[in-house]
Image 1 (cartoon, rainbow, N blue to C red):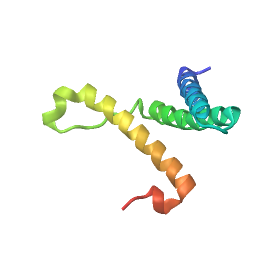
Image 2: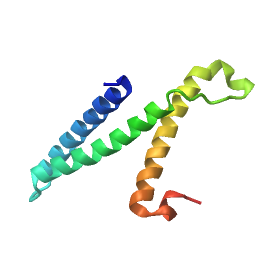
Image 3: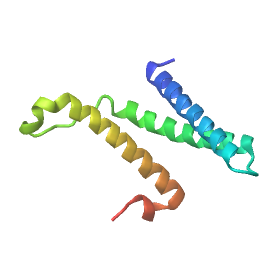
Length: 108
């Protein structure tokens, strides 16, 4: 299997496991709530967002941002941060557009 796909699957699954544990804790403290439902639904939601985010991050890994001369010394850090910012923005845009429609996805 390709290492990029493997990275996405491992990281997305880890985020999903974290979400499942958050759902377990949340259901434990809420009286009358279904523990398996909270665990499964929050785990699935976190995993879907994690897979999407890390897919975009792997997509942007080969991209470089051209910076003004003043920022050339910080080139590596800025490019790394920009990839994470672009991945988060792309994930948020995609899922908000899918669930809330284009008027919520495209702000302004």
